[in-house]
Length: 434
Image (cartoon, rainbow, N blue to C red; front, side, top):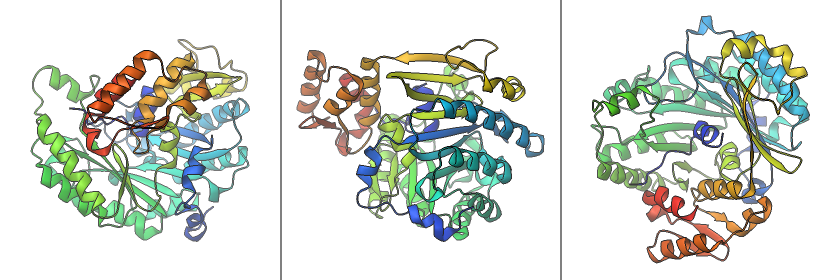
């Protein structure tokens, strides 16, 4: 069964190694020409904030459990700003399209420090706040209307809330610190505060959840008035507490058929309330797609800043992927080193832990892997031309023909897409085409 969950912003990073509400609304909703906007090579900036109150048992992102008072808010912002200065000099583009604060739990960061970082990013690219999507990931346990207004004041125009479930027992199973009413209250607080773009995450496919229950939860969240919703099947990552329990046979899991049925019922519930199912795990109203994530899915460059952050940029014709150190003390204490650091030198003790050059064939494979998750699919020949790779080697051509015969893929000229009714098998289809 191929319900995949790789579309989260953090998963992309791992796999691919003052605004008023009225002004903020200037970027929202997207125009009918949004597809043209998205297809331009706009640059994304991702800022990783690693601290959280408690690590969830399914999470394998880089995170550090800590109480808010123990977080070095200003010192971390100083370190991020130092890195920004160096990364900006090497940026492949001046055309900034999105800024995404992920984690961890960025809603724990003091808004004035987050705002200081955001202002520096916008200023360094001479970007107008009204033209850049600025997202902050938030958890209900550290988010309310006051936080929402504070984030609006520093220039944030999109909030993504980790709701995950509306059932108390499932929330406890998932290690979440909020209760169902607290989760909904967080979403409603963002909307009442005037955040122009509000998104929430749900996890389905959890033991004890019937498919219709998953649909009821999705409809309930949709009824809040938010404009974007991500619905993921629970996946078990090896380096997590759930992964350890699963290896020992001690983790209760929902059967694959029930997970598949939940995928279908959630799809029916959300599309029935006016959402477009534009990516395997993502739904949007009226052109409110996540611009930052669309950049990942379309293979655009993005600068990763912060502890353990991944970035992928084009440098002098080369496609380079890097990762920063995951050592918090080293990252914060080494802020002054960014001014002279060689971004190509990585290794133990360095602020950069990994650097790799990605060849054209690998780039095309990644474009296919991510682009095929989109309802509109990917134009293979355009992607191949951009990366200097062969679009239709014999093996790929044969694989596509097999998938067409099985109804798992559609070819329209040089564009491939997976029909929504075959998204349950997306993993296998993508593997074949790659």
